[in-house]
Amino acid sequence: MKAIKVIEPFKVEIVDVPKPEIEKEDDVIVRITSGGICGSDIGIWNGTNSLATYPRLIGHEFGGIVESVGSAVTSVKPGDKVAVDPVVSCGHCYACKIGRHNVCSTLEVMGVHRDGGFAEYVKADEANIHVFHKDFDESLLGIVEPFTIGVEINRRGQIHEGDQVLIMGAGPIGICAMQVAKRNGASVMMTDLVKERLDKALSMGADEVVLVSEENLEERINKFTNGEGIPVIVDTVCIPSSFEQSVQLACPAGRIVVIGLKNQPSSITMADITKKELTIVGSRLNNNCFDEVIEGFEDGSLNPQDLMTKTYNYKDIMDALTMIKEHPQDVLKIVLKFED
Image (cartoon, rainbow, N blue to C red; front, side, top):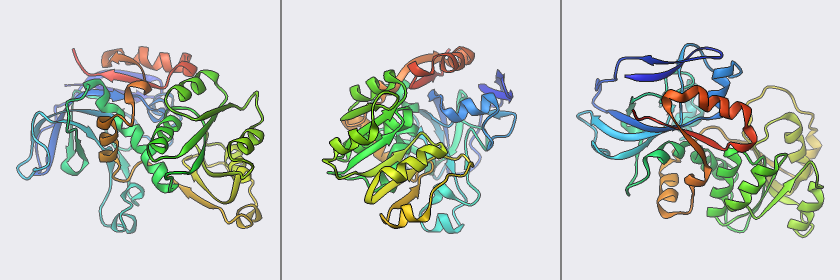
């Protein structure tokens, strides 16, 4: 079968690899129909993803149609349209035992730590397979995973009806988090430096947007919250200064969700956290969020079609990567279609 392999930074090839076969009783073989290109894939391609090793079959956002199943599989059957959770955990460390397998001590993500889903066929455990209950556009099956990041962010931030939320950054993850927050009944303000992304955020449901290069964010927050200050902040910009700013902007008893994996230190004093008794939580990957996203796709409360900027045949991977590199302001999600 064909697959997309990054041999080393800036060298990507379409390669022939063995088609997976059923080996364990809970194995599921999926014929991949679509996959979304994520910043992590770009990082593997350009050598900036410190978690990846080479060579690597990339892709952790992918879905397709079940082709075959192991003898013990009961939740899916051949012909089902599915999305695949790329998070692989041990099941017995402390995090796994308390239901937090997404931060397993030996966590692996398909497409990063092990070979991923940008291939014609993929094998995964039944537990990682999530079924669509209605017929659904095959090109959108691979976009479930980024919305699961949005669900996890909302769960970690305890975002619920009536909350006022500031999401810093209107990229794909920020917009996914926004749509989930709106689904939960929150009001959402989004910021960015790129007007085109803010226009897209408004069209996809954001209540207000702030072009921070031209507007005073604190003034806009005061108006948005009637002078109360913002109770929930999601930082998807993920640089030290954005984390520092979120601590300053949060109102007393506020909640901050951090998703960045950069290791540069931030200059934040304990007093800034303690005086307002802020809750600061990390959010990584997803923790059993796929079924909620699929429900949202099927009932129309989440809109993956609006996130998809353009589709490419998987064999045109270099054209897709070039589009992202040269026109980042125009791209939310590039989708690869696995068809000949």
